[in-house]
Amino acid sequence: MNRKPTAGWQVFNGFNLLFLTLLSLAMLLPFLNVLAQSFSSSEAIVNGKVLFLPVHFTSINYQYVFSDMAIWRSFGVTVYITVVGTLINLIATASLAYPVSRPEYAGRNVVVIMVLITMVFTAPLIPNFILMKNLHLTNSLWALMIPGAISAFNFFIMRSFFMQIPSELIDSGRIDGCSELRMIWNIVLPLSKPVMASLGIFYAVSHWNTYQNALYYINKPALWPLQVKLRQLIVSEDISIDPNASQFSGLAHMDPEGIKMATIIIATLPIIIIYPFLQRHFVKGMMVGSVKS
Amino acid sequence: MNQRAQVSKGKAMLRTFWKYKALYLISLPGIIYFIVFKYVPLLGSVIAFQDYNIFDGFTGSKWVGFDNFTRMFAHYDFLNILKNTVLIGVYDLLLGFPAPIILALLLNELRLVVYKRVLQTVVYMPHFLSWVIVSGIAIGILSPSTGAVNHFITWLGFEPIYFLGEESWIRSVLITSGIWRDSGYGTIIYLAALAGINPDLYEASEVDGANRWRQTISITLPSLLPTIMILFLLHIGKFLDFGFERVFVFLNPLNKENGEILDTYIYSQGLLAQQFSYTTAIGLFKAVVGVIFIVTGNLLSKKTTGESLY
Image (cartoon, rainbow over all chains, first blue to last red):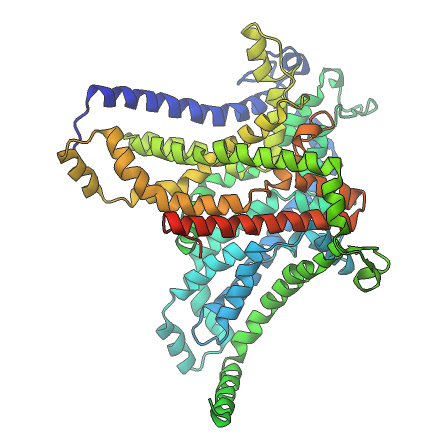
């Protein structure tokens, strides 16, 4: 394409560049502001001196957060449900998507329609809650991993991926006397690493961010995932700083605002760290998904 | 079909089942999952027509017909919350839905490839932050005493605004934070559609003397229309389903009057206040409206543009 740049076009280009730059700054700066506050002293925060760089650099907010056992426990809960939950997701989704992707599975359309219907009709909150209560899943970590074991959307993505595996490959495996499970393990799974990685990351992020189900189904503070704990910190007007916590000599210089900001950073950090890896996969995942719908 | 053919067909079916029993066995847990966790609660929605009591269960509770629904429409709270939900839904449709389209068009016009990559990386990121974190950031920067936004406002010589403590601001905060978090991510699908447009079209139009604006109107937008239409249909299907978390994390007693939506009301009245049947009726109402929107939208779209979900 060799389009001649006219004057108007160049003006537009300039504005476009400026606008998009400002926009991405708007995405970035709030985050930098939080980061800067988390490393700033309380006077600096209260006086509004902190913009995008820490003022009176201090790590006391982080020290306080790291000394809070409840936050550690929530962190542990979140790590646990992210790892175990994602494994459950992938195994459950694949073990339904693979059979249904094979042409020899009679009745596959029945299953597909059954899944499709759940995308349109979703049950209200209370019947779900009653079900969870009757299954004795409330107040257990299963409540955070089982109800969302298979996402219908991800099921369709995985199924269309499996459908691309040539039938000849499977058939030749069968002729060689390979059992169905062995075939899945030795042929299908190695071929589906890309889709497993993409969907695994989607599932993992949603477990990391899980909040709603924990709010509905869990009221034991010991089982709260990080987001619930974080929310509690954010809304509480003043974090009750224990005056007897003698290890904080600089306690008078602390501000709940700084502690909140430090907790936000800690909860976000893992996402930021895996983001480059994440970004590589989600575009692909999104593409497969859009082809399907 | 005569009987013998039917029998042999049944036999063939059984033989397939037996031959591929491993496949059926593997798929069984997934099927049970959908039945138990999706269909059972769907059936459980009948409590909307009962005076459900947790001790009597589904079978023992009294049937009350449409009482819960009539109560719903007679309730001042419900009507106000329905109004909030519809208003927030409309604002989101008018502002939140076009945002990724406009952003994708602008990104697409950017010719500096490396810089475009950088911008994309930045605008995609907020999508991966949880709503709790987004609200934490928003509460932080909008705070009247310590927030950066209000320091800027006072620096300009205005009075600080208590964004989250006044009911007049809550809807703006909800819509803006939604755009902040998701519009970048939403561009992915439009950028893919834009990349698929045949470049010959642009060259031909150039020969005909079309400028860039004209090309956008006559080539780019029409090429995007199918994608826009499909996403629009999906969007209006969730019209009353704005998302519980997204609103709940911003709600407080000061902004509830304008910010409470059906989902958050169902939570507080249903789970916390234990009005099981009443809130299930509301949930059912919401689901039915959603289905009506999808079906009507699909029908209209099929008639006008030929695009449809099914």
